[in-house]
Image (cartoon, rainbow, N blue to C red; front, side):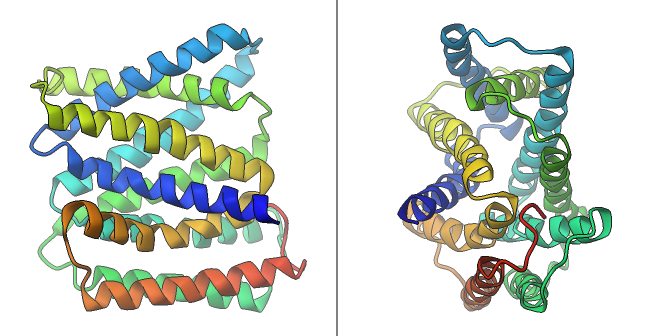
Length: 288
């Protein structure tokens, strides 16, 4: 039991750090930050592949490329673009935390999962938490749609993980996904003229944070949780990331959370408790 709690806590802590990392780079264009983040991450993971010497089929490589495009390019592209346009990190995190609800609905419709009433109440409370935290998005226009795109990308990746059930080694999977993401983000930054960045202590620190904590650490913990805790619990843990992100932002950037954010975080915690206790009773599907 303690190991499960450790995996879950590590995942939430590391995953939440990514929303703060997007702010640490300062005025450096986010396209350039993402490009260099994935170039460095791919280089680090390539060393692991050399040691492991894996054997991959074309089907496995194709699936990892698809997962990389969804879980990295679409997800992080939307996150960084939203924060670059002025949307608060906590707000972006909470919109993305709707993933459990979306994945559960797809599981019920596509796989016929039996979802207990307590789970639906918990998922509904998660939606209330989003509304409380986001508040009135008037004036933001299309920016609100960017984290929604991230939500769809991450949810699609989780659904494909369930359908394909890949058994590729964690390091190999992350390396493949990082490589295709690096290619996309480098091309994007090069076309936009943001690939050349001014090297500074702040940028180096931000890249180290993004590569070690949210890149290798966050996505590695995500895969480990999927394999040890199951897709259901792992998705539900995403409801806690806005709370931890708000604490990260408060501690790292000195931004105090609003009353609406605190209310949303409290409701989100109750939502996670409802969904988790419902699933621990054994009535929920094991892979929603």
